[in-house]
Length: 344
Image 1 (tube, rainbow, N blue to C red):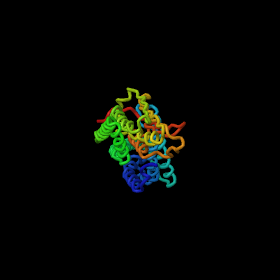
Image 2 (cartoon, rainbow, N blue to C red; image 1 turned 45 degrees about the vertical axis):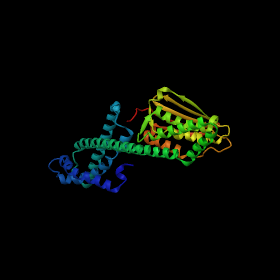
Image 3 (cartoon, helix red, strand yellow; image 1 turned 60 degrees about the vertical axis):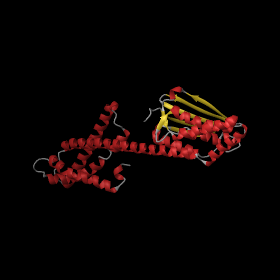
Image 4 (tube, rainbow, N blue to C red; image 1 turned 180 degrees about the horizontal axis):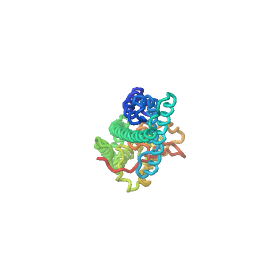
């Protein structure tokens, strides 16, 4: 729907803006001295009202045919034919009105020329309006992305200091301290490294993929000490992906989900597969984990995965892809998004 039809006041203002243009048009379009500009304006009034609505149609056409200079020939044909058709409608309605009221018809040729020019001007205004709206939406998405980045950090910090997470870590440290002081010390160091790395992100919107990978591995290192041989991690990382910028704290919820809903629920443990590759100019992230087949896989995404999907939508729009689901005993999450340079 055209934006003007969404609110009645907009349409009233639009029609009011067209009214002053009727007088000069009637003055130049009158036929000879026998037609006064007032009588010509009376004849043109119904046609002018219809033409004002017709000049709203470029909004729909502009959305179908974006302004691309590589397609200038097709655009020229499209807009020329549309403008002449709209102007011919203006002239035809004006002529029919003049016949009905038995007044001299206005200059048809001049009406077609002026109508075509006004229609093309309306198309230009619509292109400018659509571009301004797209710019405004891009700014809103950027602002929302910044807000979601801050929310992601708060969510990560909340999960890092989550009593359940800290309880399990500290319980493992306490248990190891009595039998293996070296491993207990190692877990303390890894836990502190993980927390320090997370806190060090600050308000950065995106970071190099290698840094995001390091954070995810720090998290897995902590869990590795807790689960021991039950947790296995298989990395399949293409080096050419590591310079791509990614939203901060994008991978950590994925591996956390794999540990929490996969390995932790299996007596014998399992393997988490983390694969990152390039497909042309896209980064493809795959996280797979085994889960207990006797337990129902989650029917709906957890808050961490929902958060990841939403951040991708806001940051990249339709250029991003998110899929998650269970198949053949594996739960798999796949992300696809453009490889972009780092935003400082």
